[in-house]
Length: 315
Image 1 (cartoon, rainbow, N blue to C red):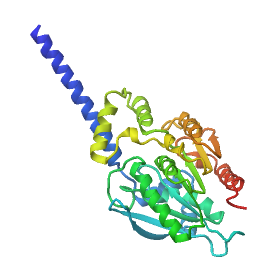
Image 2 (spheres, helix red, strand yellow):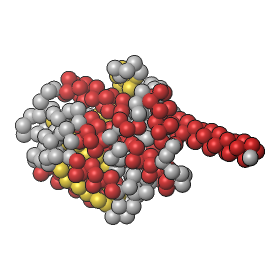
Image 3 (tube, rainbow, N blue to C red):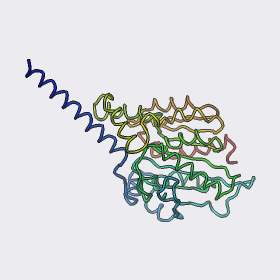
Image 4 (tube, one colour):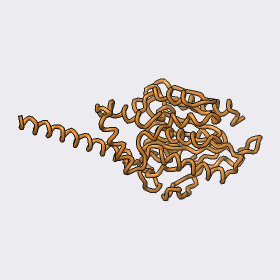
């Protein structure tokens, strides 16, 4: 009998240790991801067919600058200014802040910047904290990143004038970031989110089940505690869909691929339904995660142009 008790205790101890180790590794993977170098991102974008190296070298002329985040680290930023001969009848500047995804850098947003640049926009790109050339601070999957975005938008309004029409576009974690920020800033002229998750907890449950074949409990609660102790927030605090409920004034375009296995397409509907006011949804057939542009670049440009035109942001 005593031996059976010892065996049971040993098994329980092993189970606890296993779950703690998995939870620690999960939190560490999120807080301190292995990030892509700039050259690697350009190579990856070329490989995905977003642009050619020749086009990139000939057409992309970024003006680098650095801002100091309110949280004490540098944010590496870049401007792609509008062409000098471009203007709008109302005399107001059009500005978009482009927000990249997890492990990537600002160069991953060039494909989107090119679309807006062609439409006469000034484009502001930047590296998230802990990504690219920005300062190192724990990645929080949109929580602190959305506050950095708020800081960037304040800077853009000061730089281009308060009458500038300012919007945001984000991809993947960047999409979660722009949705979280939209809940803080009802003055935005527009928001485009591409393949963002409705909640971090829901996204991690999906990943644990489909990628690692593990149940959410007890790994997620333990990992969330580690995330809070090391990054400053619990998983449950990162809820982009809930943030959208606070913004009824900003028109929003929701984009997602119906073959997205990383962020399930069901999350698109959750986010779309949560947003009051003007909104448009585009579900791209056959597109994987962060693959909507590559799947249909012409359609993507048309969707952006139509969305901006219908909301009287361009003529």
